[in-house]
Length: 188
Image (cartoon, rainbow, N blue to C red; front, side, top):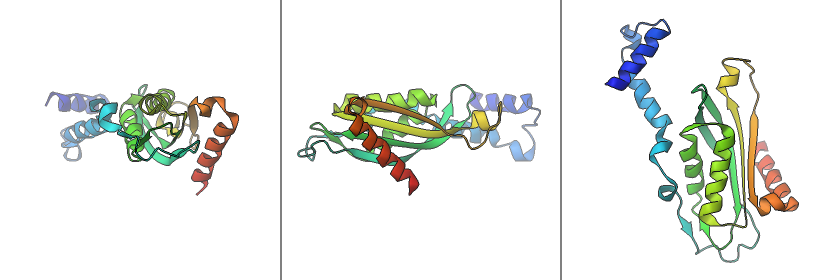
């Protein structure tokens, strides 16, 4: 129950009465919510990524992209929400990954205290490490509650980060195709 006492102390610090009817169960609910929001710490890449050689034959230089993956994270500076979408793609090189594993990889890293720049690169680095593909691309577009609900209080802004590896970094046409396909997916 020590965790709940921390939340009770926070409620008192902001001027609330943690014993009033509407807040009595709040400490337990907040502790439970944070366990879910930070569940990425209890996972690691081998639990998530399952790669196959079967199915990769004949892939050539074609991209595999999972679009519009929901991103829900907490910024490490204010513990405020980061919400948006990720596009993750790769060009196979003898191995493919189960498509559901890509959103799970994004969620694993998103369910940790984050900055968007690190999150984007963590996903790209692990895709590159696990698959050894010809190229990897990750684009994340997200809104940051730390900018909209406090400080400058700007609403409607979106931050875009990208991380490219291999052919998606060095080949202009590959990079352009990936970016265009991501734009198309967002327009739908």
